[in-house]
Structure formats: structure tokens, C-alpha cells
Image 1 (cartoon, helix red, strand yellow):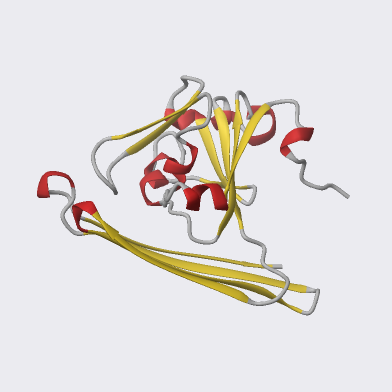
Image 2: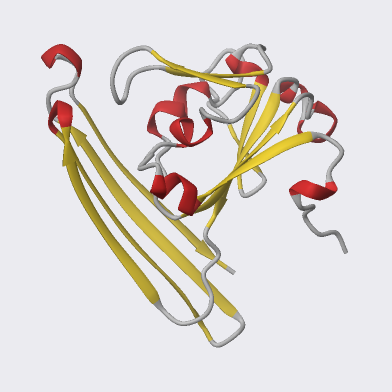
Length: 188
């Protein structure tokens, strides 16, 4: 039987940003969560909701594979088949961690992973039922709300779910407002 490897067991350079780290830094998008990691350069062309590029080790944005719990995310309409068009709308709601593999991951994840791999791990749940509500506001007319719950039914069924809404009413220089609602769930 195969089991996922921990970051300290792989032969490639890797880092992980836990959900607690992202919450402590009040970063609500996946791109913001990885921007401080070594070898990762994140650029955004405007305010929230505008085009985001993530370059790992100086390679093109489309050379980075984006996975969710090990499954590849890609835009079929993107000429390179990358996840680049989705980066500006990937927000953390029910995320356990974001793992970044720097360097060629093409031997494991295909030709679109020569720069690296970003794996978004969802919260698995289990244990007693718990929940969290978050609401905040800020500059640019930002309003954000997140609701999460997780737990289990016995020891066999693990459940977790989260929903988040981001509303930037004014945007940079009073232009480009942005609204995004995301949901995420896990069952095992």
C-alpha cells in the first residue's frame, strides 16, 4: 500500500505553510500564503481579484502545477493547461496546509511541473465537532466572511467543510471591485 510522503522524507526542496500560519498572517488567498517562501515569487497586477502569477525558481507561472489533495487543478481553456487563471480566486477556507515543492516535479506530476508544485491540503476533520466563524473588514471596502466546521461520525467517517465570501467593493483607485464566494468540503 502506498502512503503520501512527508516533506522531510522527499529528496526535493519543499516547504509547507500551515493553516495556523496563514491565519496568523491574515492571508486569505493561496497565493498570499506562499509568497514568503524561499524560491517563490508572487506578483499581482492590481488589487484583490486581479491577475496573479506565481514563479518558482524563476520559471514561468504555467510551469508550476497546482494540486488539491494531490489531484491536479487545470483550466482546459488555458493554452498551456495550467491553473494560472484560477490563482486569483483560490482562497483559504477549509485548508489544512499549502505545500510547495520547489524544482522539477515533472517526474511525479507531469511536464507542467518543471518549476515546482503547489499542493493545497484540505482539512480532514475527525474528532469532536467544532466550528469557526470569521468576519472582517478593511481598506478598499473589503468585507470577508468565513464559516468552517469539522468533526467525525464515529472513527470511520471524517467530515470537514468551509465556505468563504470576499467582497472588495471599491478596489484599487476606486475601480475593479471584486466579489468571490468559495466552498470546500472533505469526506473520508
